[in-house]
Length: 97
Image (cartoon, rainbow, N blue to C red):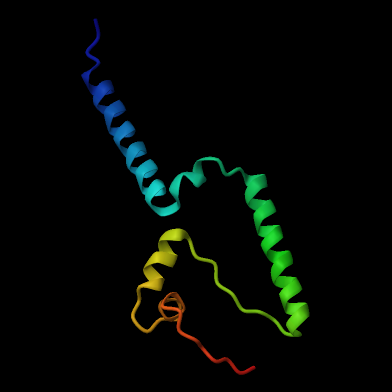
């Protein structure tokens, strides 16, 4: 019978790596990442782009925006003095344009 200990060790290493990736995605995106398909993501981007376009037409100017992952949003919203931190604290920001 051949020695399978090397194969078993490699298998366990790959499973551990996959588990780490899975847990990291769960922390960053919740369970939603598991069901996203390319077509779903494309549809969501299209819907958001349409909404932004309608806002731009309504206010008569271009809207500048930034997309964040859930993890990025959490980090940025906690930065002291940052825009997202101010918005998260429900402070009013007066804009002139």
